[in-house]
Length: 193
Image 1: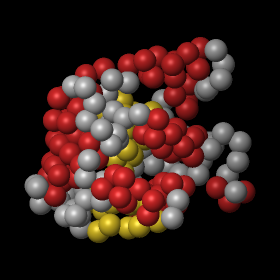
Image 2: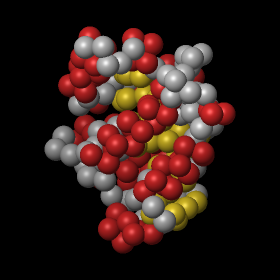
Image 3: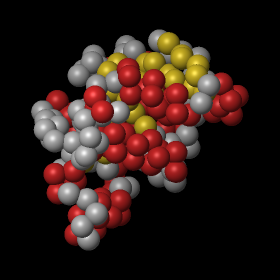
Image 4: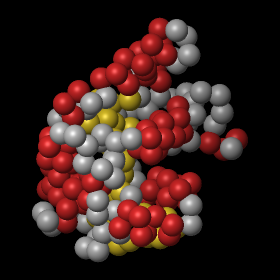
């Protein structure tokens, strides 16, 4: 894996550990010579992960819609900042550039990005690993909800197993490097789209 997209909050959240771990993710990506692909902002966890990458000699590519450039405040020290028109173009570009996804704590936007990427994987539109760094149990309830989807017949076990989870960035990267996508998509092939 040479490029990993990180989805995370544009806020720091209420616990210092979120910022510390976001910075560590960026630092670890730099040390592993993995290029960071992320939302392009210098605020919140987004800024922390970018700083962790840049300050440790790594490369960071930001993808930011024009209309968020002033609100999220574009990071000025990036390897490259790609400006796009819409949120959908942002996700599409981030997907094109990456070999996998890591999700850190965040709000609605982070979850929307995560669910779109895992849905694309479920449909067989890509075979990239999708991973959650479950910092201090932040995603425990979401992980339980995914189990409920399986228990109630709305999600297949094989699709649940597509989601990689750990509370350690090193462990998560190891899982991502060893990930094998299911051989069968949900209903369609990429060629049918």
